[in-house]
Length: 50
Image (tube, rainbow, N blue to C red):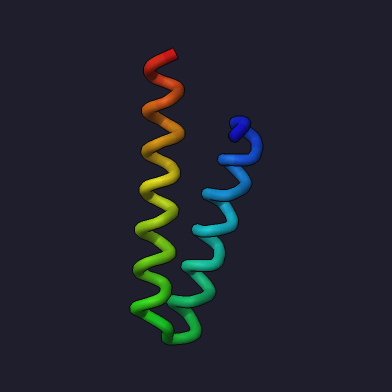
């Protein structure tokens, strides 16, 4: 996955989590925020190792 694709994925997950939180779907938004954090950490770790 390229840097651009991963940045877009993290951004979309974060925005989706915000909308889920606003709509009251707290369990769904929490899992989306968790997925966003995981992908962001994977992305950061990949950059640090290069």
